[in-house]
Each structure stands twice: as structure tokens, then as C-alpha cells.
Length: 311
Image (tube, rainbow, N blue to C red; front, side, top):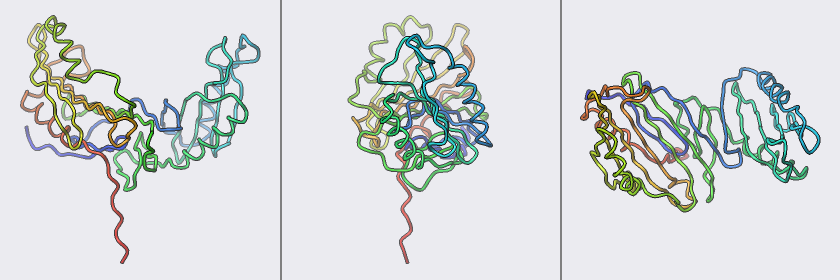
């Protein structure tokens, strides 16, 4: 494999080295107090958000079985350039918890958060205050920019601050590479309580019987593997279809420590034939292994850059 030019990508509170020119997309994103469902999109003017919100409100102006409409309350500009929609997702339920969609605009970008909130008016005020405090710590970030300060990087933005003891943060980064057709890489980080799922190797051992029924699936490596301070497990498989097409599937998983944003559950996955039902790997086994080593061994927690000492 020829020398690979690399770039460094931030995802959540972690960094990874990957080949230059990666096409980046994002999966699930969640920051504490900003909701488990997040989206970030270009919006040159806050009026673009109003158009989206007006369409949402129109859809929710339908009767609720217990009286009133599905849309319960809308609040505009409680936070600058923001729209908050409190609504009932079910026409048969009204209770203490209500659904909340929050649209905010900042520096040419629209932010969308969705979560549950309390329907009590006093708690609505508290929710707005919490959203405002947290959104004040959100800063626009070019996709490849690595902040010098501690914080959580997500799509085109950065949430400034050290993690709290029980931070509930999640990120999923998806990468494709024009120079390596078919190669797909996924990195996810999840703050967890005590892990409640079997480890990667345990799951693999349980599935061995089923894998025998899958033609051409062969385990090339199944082992414990430590990356930096993270003692995880690695699984590499070769899959060959009925007409001889070959692909490789790499996984490394670390189960994480309870309530520790510096040691979250980590999953790094790479496949060489992504995007079609089954395609021949463009990388040889040696090349696929070499790329996997580059990406896996570069995974690390992003420590802030020390400030220069005062003269």
C-alpha cells in the first residue's frame, strides 16, 4: 500500500487519523441537556427556520382526543433566533411529559433538538433556561477544525466545556473515501452506565454456529486488543460470496466505564465493500489491514492544547 496522506478528524471528545479527502456524514448526535436527537443544517437566515417551524405547526394543528390540538405551545425568541414547539406526539395521551422540538439559528447554521420536557409552566421556564445556558456554549466549527479548548465536537459545531461526571453524550461519525471505493468507516462513542451487553468476542463466540451457515465467512482475527488506555476487543472477518468476490470486515470495541466521558463505550468499524449488495474489495488483504492499523491505532481522547505561558 502506498504512503497514505492523512488528516485528523474530531468526533465527540475523540480524534482519529484517516486518509485525506474523506467524505464525512454524521449519525446520532446527543449532548447533555440539548436532547437525544440533534441535527445541524445550513441556513443563511433565521427566516429559513421560521418556514420549517410554520410547516411543523400546520401539521400539528389537528384535534387531540382529550381536547385542544396536538400543538400545545409555541415560544419564539426565548433564546435569540429560536423557536420552541411543545406538542403531544400521541392524540390519546396528555401527562406530565410533553414532546419538545427546538430550532435555533447561529451564524449561518440551523440547529434542531428534539427531546421530552415537562408540561408544567414552571418547568417549561426551567427548560428554556437550561437550553439557553447550554446553547451559549455551542460554537460554529469548520468540519476539519480541531478546537484548542476542551469540549464535544459534532456536525459543524463544538460544545465547549469539560464533561460532567454523568455526561450523557453520543456521537456517530461515518466516513467514505473517493480514493478507496467501497471502504466505509464508522466511529461511535457512547457514555454508558454499567455495560449491559456482551463483549464483542463473547457475541462472536455465540454466533459461530450461525456463521458456519454463511458461505465463505472466515474469522481472520479475534483477540483482545488495547488501543491507548482502552482495553478492547478486535474482530476481523473475510467474507467470500458464491462467485468468489471477497470483502473484509474489521471491528474494535471497548465497553467503557460507567459515567465516564473520557472512557465511553467505543466502536470502530471498517468494511471494504460498502454500498452495494456485495462488491469485490478494491483493497487486497494486506492493504486493508494496513489501513485498519492506521485508523485504529490513531484513535485517542482529545486533550486540550496547553496555552502558551505568559512572558
